[in-house]
Image (cartoon, rainbow, N blue to C red; front, side, top):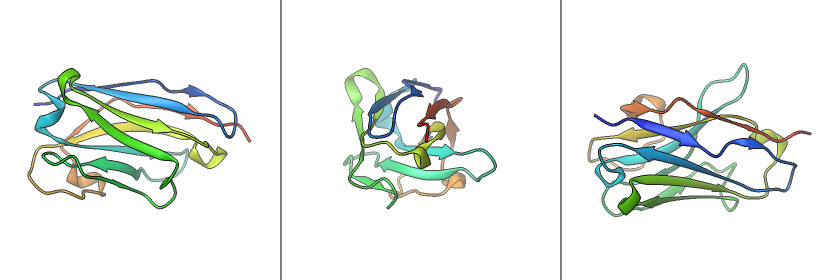
Length: 124
């Protein structure tokens, strides 16, 4: 069973960058990993994912070209590099892990484990 702990959130001006990290017990290479976010009053939405074996990456259209998901298997850590941040990127960001073999997971219910979340704020 995975336990996930996020870090790296904060407040940054529009156009700035932040790097989120997700430390996974049980080895990040054992899971497909994903990042989601939730703004106040809105549903949790998919941001980025990286598959279990090959490490293929995929993104929501809203962040494509600005965000990069990566994985450091040696340190059991997944990262989300966020550049050119916008006020619309504001929310609580959650790391998620899925144990099954399928890739391309974009729905909340497709993930088995979740971190506690880290706040990202981009003032308008």
